[in-house]
Every structure is written in structure tokens, then in C-alpha cells.
Length: 480
Image 1: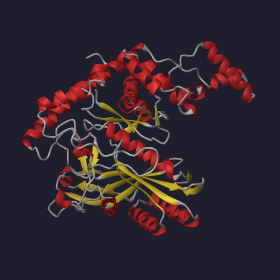
Image 2 (image 1 turned 135 degrees about the vertical axis):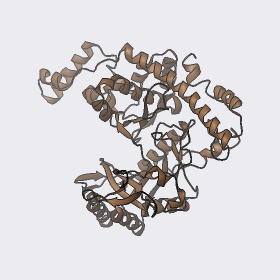
Image 3 (image 1 turned 180 degrees about the vertical axis):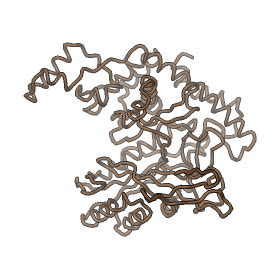
Image 4 (image 1 turned 180 degrees about the horizontal axis):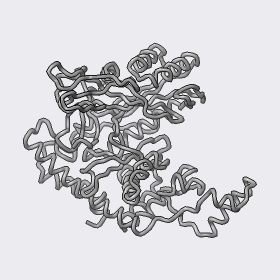
């Protein structure tokens, strides 16, 4: 169960207590950089546990990264992650209230100690910072920041039913305008951060101080680990390229079917693939989707077409509808981005050779570039194949079997400790203990009706409820 990721139970729904929990983590964490994008600085936060005197483990600091790690002198081994013998003993946790794992197995309810933080500059007029990880950071508006959080939260809840959602769960998010509060958080990050981020965080704080009307946006979510982008994992597993890409395509399709959203910027850097032996019945990978800054609701008529195509096992055609230029991000259906960005989903857009040649001719006119050079620089989009169609169909089938296994696994645990382990699909009572999104923006998740599903339903009856509930989803959809 080590590689499973599902969601995180938040100790308190009250917003003031949510911040208290987050600050508790921040105060007792080792903080490192993960990445720097155009619109945010992403940091990795690891809760630090001091081993007791009688433990084989000791806590040390790396000379090269200034980060904490754990060493076992008796076994001559070390680990960047907290060893199981320490994390399983909640009495050692440096904070009283902690986030808990939501996974379909025995790790359910255990402490979360790895988090991801995304820091954004909030401004109603565009501003650009300098010297943040040797790069620039472009501001986002308050409304766009809220939209992204609410959309990701909405998708998380709609795909959480069996504790294996398609996107990371957010546990805390806030827009801070008060400079003293901003300084409190950033100084805490700076003090607990490795050397590589100290100057960047200090520069970010100074920029906000020097620019009136600029605030700080914070998103905190579970860490997708061990996980890599689709691009990274296929470059390291070239013999599994077809399988890995189709797992990514499956994730994009399921996102549409379960939530009616298109991620709308589905290049391979926004699709994570993680090791998980329990998501599919016969494969060791699982899709995860990140970055919903461009996410959109799929128009009802196109959504209906996608569902009908999936019912007929026409997955490639269904995927291509996500590239429809009536609602998709402009770059998605632009041929010049097909090879490196979106062609793995959109394929050849059902274009003929004449269409492609005409496009190249027009591009050449616009750029005064020779047609021969344009053809070299913009490869013709390649169609997806029948092999892809067959494999995606198999992934839908294997996912169904894995869901049945998860239900059985949680039922067995529930029968032994009913107060500790819930039945699947999870109840609305549990969902209402999770982060509910931000006020404002286009989408805010409403609390679920607590009377709809009870956690006391037996396994046999639960399967009946589940079957009815999903009648218009996967089983009926795929002619089971």
C-alpha cells in the first residue's frame, strides 16, 4: 500500500483552525524547491519527526542540500522519507492535529507528512517579478486563483468515490493581503528552507512589500509521490511507451466522463504517472492530472457525443472531441504544437494531407518562411491506432476489477475495525470532512447531502447501491 495516494482528511473545517494546522506543519517541516513555473513557485514540505532516544534512526542534515534525512547506523541505510517505525507512532508527531491519508487499504487514517505548496503573486493588474529561482514570476488575478482551486476541488470530490481521485486533494488555500501575515509565512518558509530557496523567498517577500496592492496566494495539497510526468516516465521506460501514454489518455477520458471537465492544457508535463498496484487490476501505474488553470466545462452537446462514442468503444474519436476548437485552448488544436504538446491526445485531428499542406502554406505566408523548412519544423500530426483503441478499452475493464478489489479490501478492514475504516463508496459524511474550496470564482463545491449514503450499509447492499449509482457510468457505458 506504500505507493497509494487518495486524499487527505482535514482535521478542522473551520477556516481559522485549518490555518492553524497548516502553520503547525510549516513550523515543523523541512522545505525544498520542486519547480518554478510562469505563475507559481512550488515547494515540497516534509514534516520532521525527531527519533526517540531508543530508536535506531537519527535525524541528520545533508551537507550538500541543507535538507534533513534519516540515518540508521545499525543497518547502514538512510532515507529522505520518515521511516515507517516513526511515522506509525503518532505520539512522536510534533503537532497535535495532523492530516490523514485516505487510501483504500490499511494505510487509511495514517498521518500525512509530505505536502506540496504553491506560492503565487496575486494582483488585479499584471506584474512580473525578478530573481525567483533565477526566473520571472507572473501574477494571477484573485478570480483566476479562486477558479483554479475550486475547479480542482470539484474534480477531486467527483472522482474520490473509491479513494483514488484523478487529482491531488487540496487541504488549505488562502489569498493573503496583509503584509504582516505574508511576512510571517514567508519568513517561516525561509528559515526552514534549504539554501536554494532562501534567497528566492526573500526576493518574493521584498517584491510584495515594494508593490502596493500585491498579495500572496497559497495552495497546499498532497504530494504525488512517487510520481513523474508522463514525459519523464515514458523517456525512462521506452519499451512501455504505448501503455503509459494510454494510461494518460484513459485519465483524460475519465476526467471528462466523471466530471464533464477538460483539463484543456493536456501536454505531457501536466499528466502524472505514479506507481500503484491497486488502481488497475493488471497494471502497476495510475494517472494523475495537475494544473487546472485552463480547465473548462465541456459543452453539453460535445459531452453527449463523447459519452456516445465511449459507449461504442470509440475512444480515439472521443479524445479528439476534446480538441474541438469551439471550446479548447487555442494551442490544443494548433498543428504546430501537435508533435511536442497535444498530438498524443488529438492525433491527426481527422485532417487529410491536403488540409495539412494548406496549413503549412498559410503558415509559410504568415512567417515568410520556406515551406520546406516549415514542414521540417512542424511534423504532421500522427493518428492514434487500433492498438491504442484496444488498450484503452482494456484499461477501462481492468479499472472495474480493481474497484471491486478495493471495495472488498475496505469491507474486510471495516468488519475488523468499523470505527477506523469506512466502506466504499465513501459516505458524504466523510467527504464533508475535507477541504471544500474557496469562496468566489466560478465554482465552489457545495457540501454533500449527508442523508444520501450511509456508511453502515453492508458490503452486499453497498455493491447493489454502487451498481445502481454507476449504471450510467462505466459498466453500462462499456456494455458489461
